Image 1 (cartoon, rainbow, N blue to C red):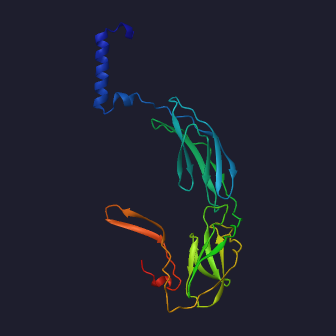
Image 2 (image 1 turned 90 degrees about the vertical axis):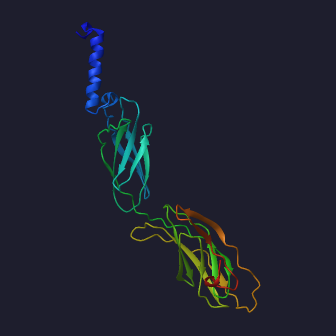
Length: 265
């Protein structure tokens, strides 16, 4: 019985064990660390799905350490880490395919549970068109019209805008909400509209109805120009680490006589 071994001999045996563990590169703390994995999450399920969101829920894991986290793995390559108190998850998706998802638990010692069941979700096509923007005049000169417009709303996250002149496509403003129409004729009337489009339609982007019609007459060319350009707006920038450079960006000015291409900053 171990109880009959003298104390000095017990101490000697313990010292020998520590020496052997050190010789083989194993620390006593590592030898005694937690090697038990959490139980696997169960009943992973899709609780809701829309064109741009998948909602998930699962039954919780348990672990002898009492502390672990969840890993949610998506077939598009994304992995998310969640606290053990969270057993639901909302994930942004695009309506262009099927997503497969599983969950596992991992404790502080790196022990991983087995994977949960795998679920699949196919977001329905986006069939909702954006709302039309409201366009307004920002400035006019003999050959240009400067415009701005309100933001459209949509069920998706990305919106793009197209300016139309007399019903024909003109400036593709992308995600900006301002534009300058170039190459116009002095003292000529134009009808301007703007449409919004989203990114993921059912086969093609959904396009809004046209904005309000903005009727604008370009001004005459003047030999006397006494009005300065408008102030540049929204100045911002960033420095390039280690390059000794600063990149600056701003909204272009507009002038009542001088075209954009001839303005200097």
